[in-house]
Length: 87
Image 1 (cartoon, helix red, strand yellow):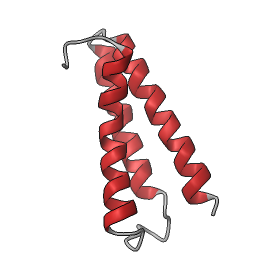
Image 2: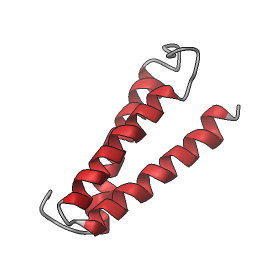
Image 3: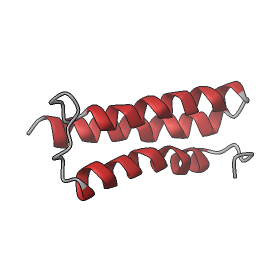
């Protein structure tokens, strides 16, 4: 799957880390474990790791996969900003 260059592959790869962070910090820990009194830090870390993954795929020439990862990452951060940080 890592050799496929497509937006759908990028969306799937890009949703893995934010999905794991949402599951762990949102459901298992119920946001009781907060870094530096900032509830958005764990999600920001997942976004930052996705940025390195995007850079890796752009470097390999898989632009469509990188675009898919970027799209899902930005949508995830927008949703976290709206639903988690604005309350």
